[in-house]
Length: 193
Image (cartoon, rainbow, N blue to C red; front, top):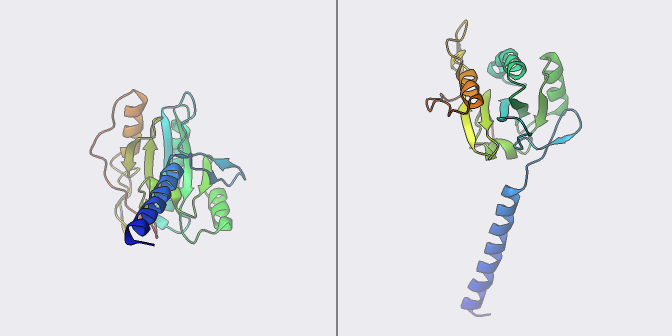
């Protein structure tokens, strides 16, 4: 086979692979939940302003300290937003996720993202990290819940900001959240670059 024919064949195969990758990116992402059902976390239900993803880890003390506030936010804004707690640890153990859910009395749907598809798609790198996606799939907010942690090991007694609540209030009224969202502080999600 001539070099030109081999290059053409290689190009066609590469193009077919790219088409498959693009098709996979446009399909709705489904993840298993602790409720034994599959969920499409980026699909915004009718009547909701968006989806809130809380990237959490049973193995991260900082993430665990935020769970009570994340539970309160999910309860306070449930009429306007769909909430998911997402575990994206590479070494995810379903028993640990179930125990974490029960110990923290998490009321929102808890998802297992062991392959890190959702974390990578949303560029989540830290637990806890909040991501708010709109009905069109666009990220409307990404960052910290509040400033309880100033560094991964330096915690304040009480937070002085309400970053996520302010963003949700803005989105609820049809406004864009402040562009000054601060990055989440906590534990790295291993395997996500």
